[in-house]
Length: 414
Ligand SMILES: *Cc1c(COP(=O)(O)O)cnc(C)c1O
Image (cartoon, rainbow, N blue to C red):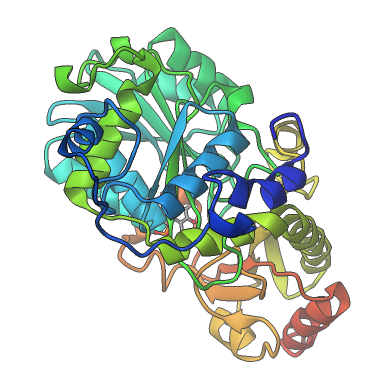
């Protein structure tokens, strides 16, 4: 199906991957944990990777493999591995690849739980330097002899900083560093990782790919841009004939198999259904976000709006160059004396909830929820203010959405 448009591929690839029985249009949800073989030698060959097949569904199954194939095809990568959650994709992959004594350069602007996971890596002896990734020269300044990789989000949650992807990419290529990118906020319909030389692309499928807030999952795609022979920690056991597969083989064995955060077959089905409408949902989410950002930017109870589609956003030009749209997440600060809790309590349509990428518009106070474990200094360094409200814009009718924010905010204008 390659060569066809994104949605054409998605709606026609699910049932085509493994040729399911009876011509089922969807890849079946295969519940079997075990796979039996008539010949013991076949089982041995599958165990040893000499034959394609499944042995135990913690490591692989038909439903999850079908989804992995679609996700990989989307990115034109060399392979994909799914996990039970986005956090599992990130943590299992990094723990499979890095060791005590390694150094990583990491974006200072990260999703709170990812940030917390990097603190765990520090505790087990991995050296982390947090930098402002909106300018690649900061990354160059942080380089050490033991640096092995750079980790960033394309578009950061919640303040919407846009990473200097071009600068980071050439820096990583020049120094043979693993370029690890979380593109949860900019799914494939908005952003093409291969244009930016990404090595490992992470995404929380829970968010836009699923879209309906009813399944947890994550994925890492190897985009094929890393020369794994230059990476020092691939175990000899995983250095097969195809060098391009070295990284993913180790991620599958040490990351997925040993840590065991496997995506369920049912969730895999939900995500392949979600993919079918991803492009249309993103279009609508982004359009609503742009309209809402404009409205908020003009409201007297709002001090500042963070949305890359606004011409006053510090990386507006870069966002327009990198992404086909400006995304569906925005944050805003309130003027002195207006309480974020009260503004949220007055909203009737938008749900007061964490999570993002849902069909429903979701809003929450950021500093006191996702980032409440961080110190005031840490929040300030991330650009997070006390009154900040984050909005994940959904697919509601635009006028209804704006009316809801308007009735709440208007009540605080003296
Ligand atoms: C939600 C999120 C994650 C974690 O994904 P889960 O599926 O919730 O574990 C990672 N990165 C970003 C940018 C996210 O928004």
